[in-house]
Amino acid sequence: MWSYFFKKLYHRFSIRSYFSIRTKLLFCFLIVAIIPLLSLGALNYYQSAIVINSQFGKYGENTVAQLDQQISSALNRMNQTTGTIYSYLLDPARVGLGDHVPTTYQEIMDKDDFEALLKSLKTDLTRGIYLITRSGYYYGENNLDVSKLNDIPAWRAITYSSRGPYWLGFYPMNHGMEASDTGEPILGLAVRINNPAGAQHGSTILIEENAQVLLDMFHMFEEDTKAHLTITGSEGQPIYQSESPFTPDDSDVVWNRTLAANAWKIEARLPAKAFYFSSSLIRSNTVLVAIVSCLLAFGLAYIFSSKFTARIRRLKDSMQKVSFGKLHTRTLVEGKDELGSLDTSFNRMVGGIQSLVQEVEQSERLKKEAELKAFHYQINPHLLFNTLNSIQWKARLQGAEDIRQMLYHLTMVLEGNLDISQELITLGRELRMIEHFLKIQEIRYGSAFSYEQTCDEELKPYLIPRMTLQPLFENIFFHGFEDGKGNISLSVREEGEHLLLTLSDDGAGITEEKLKALMRAKPESKPQGRGGLGVQNANQKFKLHFGQQYGLTVHSTKGEGTTIVIRWPKKEESPHGDNQDH
Image (cartoon, rainbow, N blue to C red; front, top):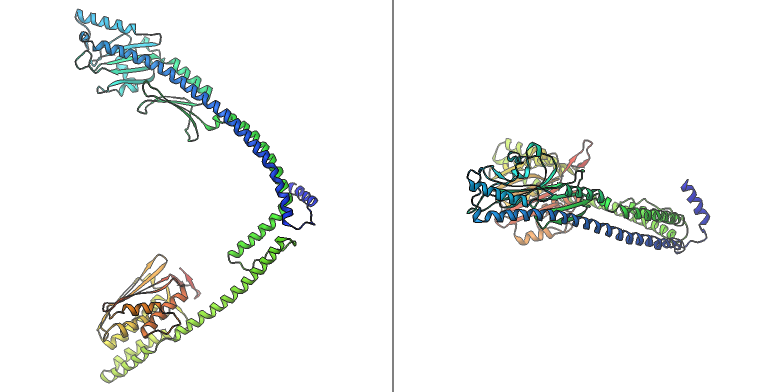
């Protein structure tokens, strides 16, 4: 429905007599009128949100500061009480206070005086002031069951090596006599006495106050701010936390305070959604107005520029297809404006590129075929001539068996070399041709040389250009070895998706100057000597079949030998006879 409406609206207001892109862009620029409206709405929201969030943030900080003040007041009061008791016990005249039930008159008098002090220190919130000795005997009101103190988790954590005040946190009143177990919330403070030369060394001062007022204040804070309140001790132990389940998040608004009295940390966490609730209402209204304005602007932009932008997108898609190699792509030419001229020029350009690429492909294919044939026909028949001379020489000196063996191996070698039906053959077939070639050399030279081959069977099905290894072996015998004496090693291994063939000999080697000239020589240049021809032919075969990044690398030292390394990608013969990448 909307598409039909916009389509009719476009046909009504479109001016077909205007072909200039500049004229059509003028209509798009009218949309800029909406920018002041959106800017004004955003500015109003920004200022309102700052004011509201700032006020709410200050309110939360002030409330947490009030919590700090109330808690600190209670803690300081309890600290002062323990300080008074501690000072009393430091008096050398109080050494008569023992850790057992008083039995003498003086001990009873000292006990009464001390307990009178404890009573005088009580306030309306005090629920108990005790001095608990190491033996379990305590001074204070007779309403405490010392054995139940271990029910308080924080009390169990106190050791006799503890020093200074130890805040027990909040816990229920359930460690007194049965009539005293009211279960009301208590805030406790324990102080270990460290007075080796005085009274009650190692005893503990215990002060407990009613914590209901503080807890009610915590709950009121939680209901008022909707924040999650947590109080932790100086060592990170939990003292209090809100009962409602809460999962902290990095986006939470956090109010922190650290109590000066005992280094407790108050942390109030308010989810960002709750904190910004008031400003989100303003934002929702602003967004609603912005959406309506944007829809209106979008409708106008669609009316005036849909066809214009569609032509640009179509031209861009056509360019992208051409960049992917689809040279048959053509774009539809509409109109006689600048975009129409651009479409026409694009089609002409792609047509010219397509023709040029076809010509280059045809030229490269013919060039490759010509180069492969040229490299094939450059095979020097030196092997055939030497073999025939050897056969004639053996025929005069030995029996017919040697002649038969040499003829057999020569036939196998020639059969592989003269078969031009396949330019790529399996590595196993190429290695078998080398074995026949070496049999001929063995008949020729005897056991003057040794040959070591290392190649896993799973690597032999991979393809290699035909007759690339034999010219390299010929160079070893005709240029590297003297009278066929020396050692040859060949190894083939895989490196990821590539094969690496290493051919080494300990022959005469190649001088540095000749090696540099050999590696600099171009394929079409005439090589100096037969050795250069074999190496260059093999190198160019690998490059033509697999790419310029592949081929031979020659390392040689005069008098020490030569090592040739060949690297090419794995490729196997398909069941239909076509070659395919591994």
